[in-house]
Length: 309
Image (cartoon, rainbow, N blue to C red; front, side, top):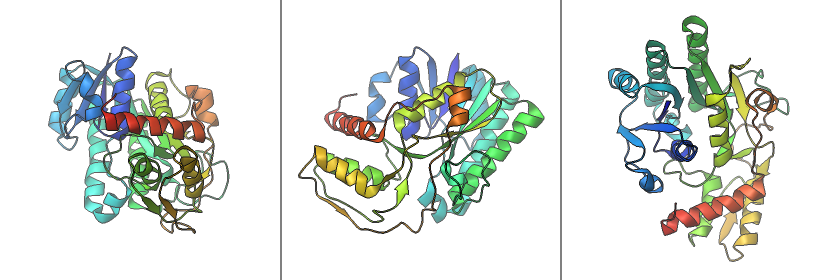
């Protein structure tokens, strides 16, 4: 049962490839970039295909040749890059997703799992945030997530593609290669002996640890038919950057961290996500509270630095 992971060499995709392999499944990575060091030990064991989701013919041929039964679509231009290049955001985020859905339709793929985001909501007025909350994204990235969800729902309704989308909270965890955010800076710089300086120390986020994200993806991939198609995935906790800094200093007392107070004007005010549908239909329950996530994150970063996988 081959599972295609688009962006299989990226942050979330690489963790998912490793998890699927460890579970004895048959992951196939589909990515433009080279295999990251964290997956070196899987060369020769996992099929790593260099491919572009924007090439619809190439993607379709891969799905056919590899006898793909399920697709987890992780490829996306992130927030800053989407704002810098709206055309690229449209082409990659929306066009690439439509190519994935079309390949799934033609080849009768059993399920497509799409990585959406809390960014789809924009500013929120209730807490916890249910999936039915109005979607008023304030970034191009969030807008592309909403568009892709609607494409997926239409492919489900009109063409019978089994589509499931996960709206992820703010993902943190080792292995991010691009778009390193403030949470990553606060954790990874001190581990590497570097200074960390960020603004918006009072801003509240709902973090979700990378290993919980991967857990949710596997559950969504193999769950029986669900009543809903869109699910929130988070930790159920809120955290500020100042809290992260304080936790890091408990483990690295000499960490050089500077937090500027205030709020990040580019981040909408949001509460935490309502996880009840994911709990009921996917049997999702986060394993990592924020302190546990931080400890594991730091150990993972140390392992990557020393070449341990």
